[in-house]
Length: 158
Image 1 (cartoon, rainbow, N blue to C red):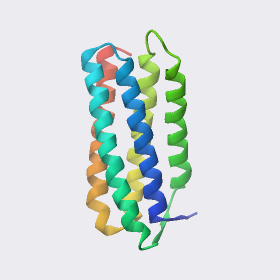
Image 2 (cartoon, rainbow, N blue to C red):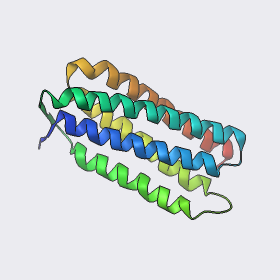
Image 3 (tube, rainbow, N blue to C red):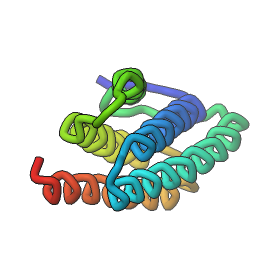
Image 4 (spheres, rainbow, N blue to C red):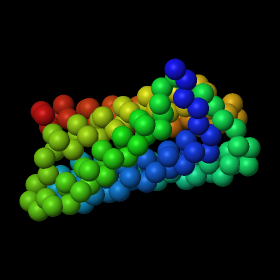
């Protein structure tokens, strides 16, 4: 079954994912007491902010073309799921006063980055050719985020 979406709609959803990811990592940085962990979360937040701006530009450009692409998976549902998971994590972390459950937040972050890689890879296969290099660069960065988060999890022994 093929799922079709206007290219600008997908880019706008990617903007939303990146906005929420930025807030998520900023919040985790604010809750982190370890300097290295805080630095990692701030770095990831900045990358997400850059991705947000990139996708916003793609959405503006794609809106003028009104191009529609087919995907083998329901990209919109996956993206909405990812956005909701990040928002839920933000709400749950808002009530934490003392220490964050690093295992829980790293699992959320790892799952979110893995989802981003999967979704952006699918988009890159169907999306406008002129943006394929942009998607490839973002996918590389998201994979790097995934590795850093997994390494942190291993370093912390969780």
